Image 1 (tube, rainbow, N blue to C red):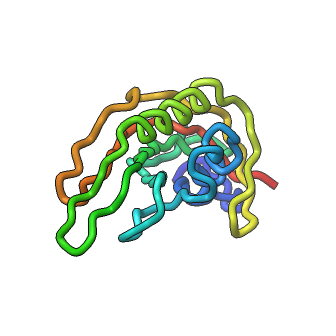
Image 2: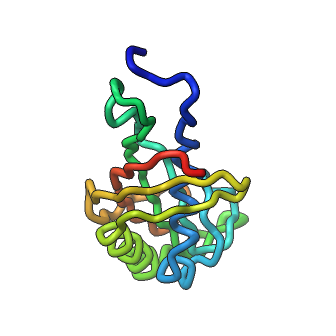
Length: 158
């Protein structure tokens, strides 16, 4: 790539950065504790947040600084799993409230350093809300699910 310094530190994985960010926000952890991951485990305790990378790239590919702009999807699940042929019980209120907490935190996000569970540090310049929380029907797992998408601008941090 033209203009890229081969000694620069590339930004860490955006999903682990977004997870670390969510874990640093009390309004989110008050609802889910540490139940934030990059996939929804079968039978997971609810409520639960799944963080997904919706696409990522350098903010400016000609820059000497590696700053990523990434779309992060937050899936907010709540309810009770069904088992042995019984029907699940979606909890739309909790899932919606969780999505709203993430929405509010993302809306005001500005210049935060986070440390991932593996000790990697990242600097988040900000988040822009792309889509407000929207209800997603989950017919297969019968849990309440609200989706919120944000653009996260971040880089590696010392």
